[in-house]
Amino acid sequence: MFNRYFKITNGNLDFMYANMAVKNINFALISLDYIFNHPNFNIGIYHDEHSFYFFYIQSLLTACGNISNVFYNPTGFDKTTTARCSRLRQTLNVSKTEFPLVFQKEVRNTNEHFDERYEEFGAVGDYNLLDENTDSFIRSTIQANPHLRTYDKEHCIYYTYNRRFQRIEYDLKQLQCELETLRDRITNNELFNSGWEDFLPGETVV
Image 1: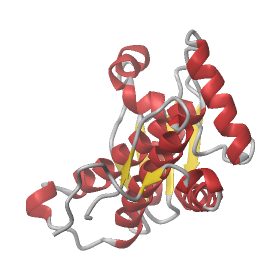
Image 2: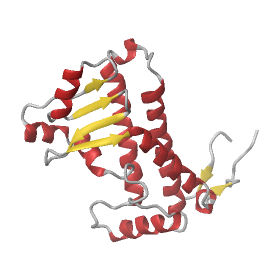
Image 3: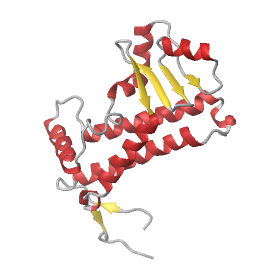
Image 4: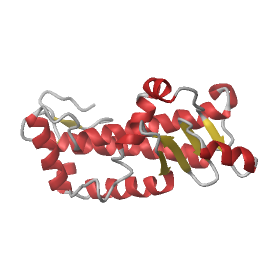
């Protein structure tokens, strides 16, 4: 079989969510691999360097948001979801304290609610790239003033601002370490492989 199967029941939803978390961890790590290791990208596909880096940063933040939704119920209104998230965190030993960058909501919010940030900040720079060749005056100017999204290629730091005009430094190398640790934590737990079906009724193997 090219794909593995599982039956959705009330008794194995935790298994499904654990696997969904790992799938999004893999998506996030793929994005980081491109951000760190593919400087010679095809400009014909991405149009420019900024599109390349911020495409993968956006994909990275979306994947982290999906991981967060597995373990935390942001609204708190659905008691069933809240209970499931709490149970998963306990079963897999996952917490915001140990994985602060994976679950750092403010970073994702700036990207997701960019239109609101434009309105709140007024004139604000966006989509800046810094590297070892960036003029020191330009670097200091960008870092000293609110810019919605800035990535420092040299130090692997993503900078953004929350709605209180406070700058956030998001270390992508440290995020990578957190994601790899979280993936190992989940995949080494018996829950992760508890729901696969070896045979489906009526299946014919040719």
